[in-house]
Amino acid sequence: MTCRVLAGIDHLMVQLGCAVTLPWSFGVEPAQGAAAFADYQRDKSGPLAGNILQRGAFAAASTGETWPSLQLFLLAVMPRLYPEADPDPRHGMTLVSTINRARSRGEITLASPDPLAPPVINLRYLSEPHDPATATAGVRCNLQILHERAFDAVRGSGTFPNILPTTKAEIEANGGADASTIWHVSGTGKMATGEAGVVNRQLRLHGLSGPRVVDAPVIPQGVSANTNAAVMLRRAGISHDLAAHATAKCFMCCLTLAHLDSNRHRPLCYCVRHRLF
Image (cartoon, rainbow, N blue to C red; front, side, top):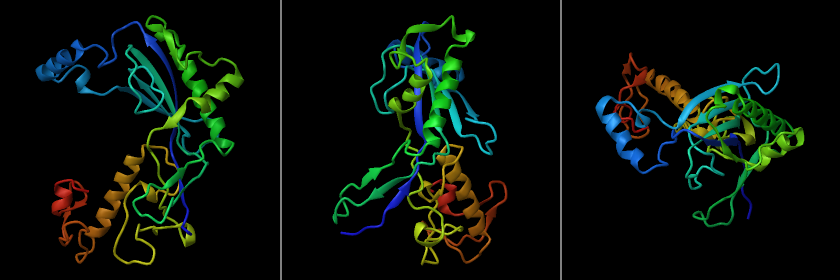
C-alpha cells in the first residue's frame, strides 16, 4: 500500500507548579460549586465569571525574534500530567509554557487500506535542536515566576514535578519529560504549492475551483497564537472575499453571498448569521 505522508505541527506544552495555601482552585471542594453558582446568579462574579486561566503572556526565548516563540499561562489549579488526566485534589497553581513556532515536523500516514482505521500519527516532538532550547527557555522563565516574592505567602509544599529542576541539566531534561500536547495540531493539509501543498493562497483545494478549506490543517507553519484565533481571522478574510462576488455561494446552505454586513464584515447567509461555520 502506498499513501501520501502529511506533515504536522503542534504547540508543545511544558508545565510546572505547586500547591498553594489558599483555597483558590475551583472544583476542589464540593461546597464550592453551589457557592460559585450563587455568586454568578447574584452579580455575575466569582469563579464562574471567568475560567481557570488567570494570566497569559507572549515571550521571546532568545534575542532577535521577529515573533514570540513562547506563550505563557498561569492557571489556578494543580498541574496535570496531560490535559485529560484526573485533577489533583489540592489547591494549586500551574505555570505553562508552549513552543509557538516549533521546527520539528511530524507525519501522519495511513495504517491500512481501511478508511475507518485510525491513522498513524507521529509528531516527532523536540526532534529539531531549536525546540528543546525553546522549551528549556520556557521552563527557566516559569521557574523564575514561581519563585517570585509575590508568591512567598501562598506557595505550598507539594510541587509538579515532584522535584523542581534547578541545574541547567535538570531544566533541559524537564523540557521534554513533562511535556504534552494542548491539541493545537495543524499543518496536515497545508497551504503551499507543488506536492507539499493541499490548498493554494485562497485556500482552494489544488485541482478544484470551488471548495475551500478554512481550518487549522492549512496553516503552513507554527503561529504565535492559539490556532483557533488564526483560523477565525482567515475565515473572516475568506468570507469578505466571497461576499465581493455576487455569484459566490455558501458551501453549506448554498445561498448567494451577494450582501455584506458592514458592521461584522461577513457575508449575510443563514450559516453565518447562526454561526454554523
